Image (cartoon, rainbow, N blue to C red; front, side, top):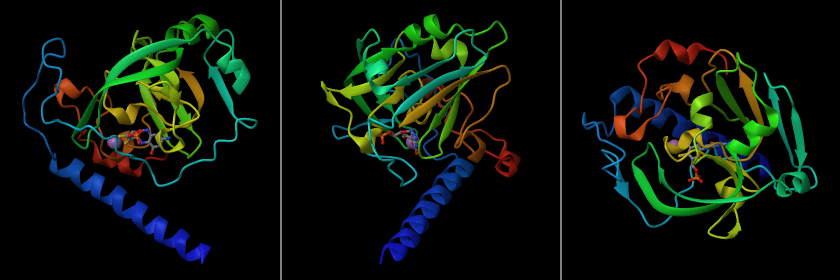
Length: 232
Ligand SMILES: Nc1nc2c(c(=O)[nH]1)N[C@H]1C(S)=C(S)[C@@H](COP(=O)(O)O)O[C@H]1N2
Ligand SMILES: [Mo]
């Protein structure tokens, strides 16, 4: 029955979330080593994989391109709402980068196609008091990054991977890619990019993950567990 499936799925999801929170409390995978991203391609405590694992909250939003919108708003001079064709009509970039997931796997050499953060910033023009960015996704997920980090030259909203449309399980039709940070900062199924003055910790950031998420500094987990009580 569909309802039973729903309950099962919710149980699996709650179990996964509880497991990740437990790892955060235990400091799982922490080696205590800090590395230099310019020298060590593989961050401390990571292992390379060849496949591409799927990690999310167990909900895969539908990929109906007619209904797809990307809203870019908040503290910007020029708010934007793109339909799919508008998004695809923007200047396109191809960027290859590595993925580093906080659960311990890294995947090298992923070729992404999409619209660069630099283009989005030039178009939307964040106000002087905009300091942070919040990504909102179709599954209810959110994650936060600093504006100067969103402005990194390796950041894009990707619609393709290895020259093919991004699979829906990996965030297609379009997701954020911010490869310099643990992959939980790369919001799948992004629907809104909001520019804000004050930082606003996202889904995992209020559940024990680090607020910044630098893999080479092993910023896996934060230590603010009262944040769990905070609303998301
Ligand atoms: N919308 C959304 N984005 C998300 C997530 C999610 O649950 N929902 N999970 C994050 C986490 S924890 C990781 S590791 C990566 C996983 O991306 P992948 O499934 O394509 O490997 O997506 C990130 N972006
Ligand atoms: Mo993750």
